[in-house]
Image (cartoon, rainbow, N blue to C red; front, side, top):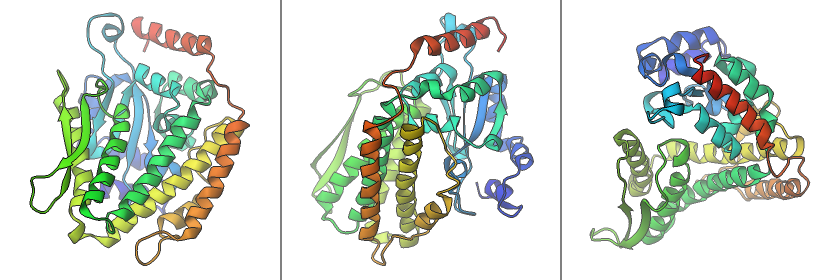
Length: 358
């Protein structure tokens, strides 16, 4: 991803769409042209992650691609199974099936909502449908975002505190924090992988048979007819999390500090974004006004020499949370969407798919 990132920043830190489109034509992105669910089915493709927030740092941020693709007529009205999403880990690309994309919008999922509020130049490929979605993005916004964005911000805070705890707690307590991190990761799987029934993966702590461990996180997994690629992605995420807690004696302080600062920055960014949602009823993904401050956090503004966070950070977070609590009670957002408006839109799109107009 280093070469790809260089393309973005070779012109004084400014993004050049010509370079991006040139990058998408390389073999690294052949899946866009070869995957049968993509090819000419892509309905929207845009930049995600730090670049879309305005918080990227040269040489330290990857290029994330997000979007949706239209199902085929057979997938909508035939017996052919539809897909939920295509995930390409090597290029940090996630492309959802159109109807899955809409369902996640209706849930006010933060990772999906933000895709309708990007800067215009960050949309790499658009169709009439994606333009309509962005134009009428407010029809999906409800008070559900209180739970979804609040929960997501809570996960960032938990990650921050859990990571700090890794260096200071006994082994058994570290396993407890590891279990929390693993369960937080599972909560996001619905956005990345084929859905599975609740209870199919159960995590718990029990006595370890390893000499150097008192307790250990175990998993009971019961999945049937589940895509191996998705299972591999899930296990890979579990592995990465457990490695963080298992290599404490080989701590890379610089790298770990960078991750902590990134979690802290995203926590504050989420508050700013949810304020726009609750107070103004709009989606603003690129944080122009707050960008300098967010970058200061990412570069360690609030981190102490011992790797913990200064009290002023938590005081500032508490102030933001008070505003969040007030905004919840006085929000401009409705409790429910106008389902007729949403259904009319979805039915129109799906009918055009069946007529092979899309």
